[in-house]
Image (tube, rainbow, N blue to C red; front, top):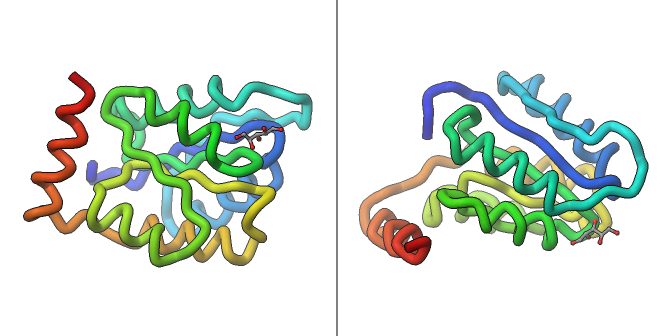
Length: 149
Ligand code: RB5
């Protein structure tokens, strides 16, 4: 992971309040938060926001990313289409820790209509607090990357 604790956040209209809560929470924990919106509740398209956040991570501008939509699923699918992105949806803290430790996930996706605020913040802490373990897991992550062609 790059040295800079720079974190990009984005969502669709279904997750704006939770995204803003996560932004404040991560900033309080020392992350430099790059919240790329949107800021209005107007209906929008999650693939645009997932891709925009993913490009910030893939380019190296941000070390990690957190994206949200209603379920977390659609925006995760979009982010994973960007080369170099490994994004998982999490509804529990164990998975959030493991996708960093074993899968070297560089993005986390959350469903604002699935998890409450308290659990979402615990999931965020588990994700941001974990490190990739490398070793045998690096071999497998390299195999994922190889699938990108
Ligand atoms: C928007 O209504 C909803 O479809 C979106 O937020 C997300 O849940 C899609 O995966």
